[in-house]
Image (cartoon, rainbow, N blue to C red):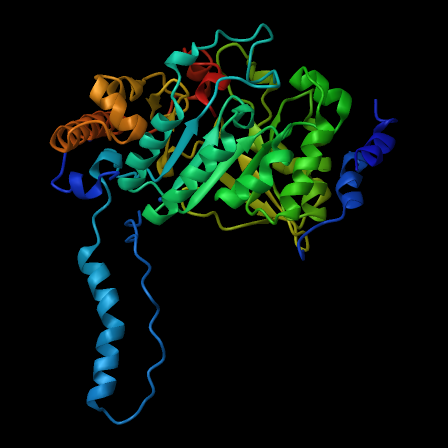
Length: 446
């Protein structure tokens, strides 16, 4: 696979409710390798209530016969689980609902600040000061936070970084998070640069991983090295192949478009959607500390779409899913899709359902907001709390353990609720974002 691409590219120049305790956290689609590699040299010319955790069996067909007692009993038996589920269904958590009635069902957790690349739009060339390991969330703390949010209605968790796959226990962490599906989690995803993911992906999928987003901003090896300050394009392409082999869906490729840097490669990325069932998402260049953002480098959604329409005038808008961040399109006959993340020119704040936890345990309610609150500190407030998070507090007396656990979760939910209620209707405009203080992207987790 790598030899093919080398050969082809050599010539390319908050309030606590009474339900707290109850809610407590107690290969038909595979594309050939050759087809994948051909892309690199292509021409450059959210208000639903949370579903109850139990599975409700569907009604079976009842034969239309004369009414008899057995048939009536059968119907009652079929209706009973549905009626019980409706009667017992809980309203969506008040702690995760903001003042604009946005229900936050999606949690992004950064599990490391470290990365094996140095992408120009993500990290300053000189790097960033890293948080001491003792200040970062431990695996039990990550799991405790995830459990708490799922108990309140979160149905999707995405692991980010840094680069999440360089965490030594990434497979074990994914496997433990995968167990939350029995408590209401529906999707477990990861955003990765793909450098080492291929080697770990199969075990992660077995552990419960359901979706993959890959960051890839160029299909040219020399340009990849310039944009990431490292080599590794072939590894990313191998990861795409592996994800297709494992039939991971959705599989998305995120491309940050910068004028004069990689905007001319848009047609090449569009070509990917002709060859394989992936969604290529073009992202407007966004300002973060240290990435030397310049409005002139930012290619707006309208320009990117216009470029594609010139080559594919039949490109069609696809109905957006609820809470979707991307404006999605598809070219008829292509198995893949094309998306645009338009944070700078057409914000999607009105349907935002996302919350973020940084690797040092801070809750951010908005990617572009600089307000943060520490969840980590509440879990470390006492030795008893540390024990409860670490191993369930097996060494504590039961009454002490339960009292401390309930108080910790009460406190955490109060703080989460206040933070969520403080989320603004929309983030600042482009002119203000450029001058606002915020973490570098790598210390947020995207």
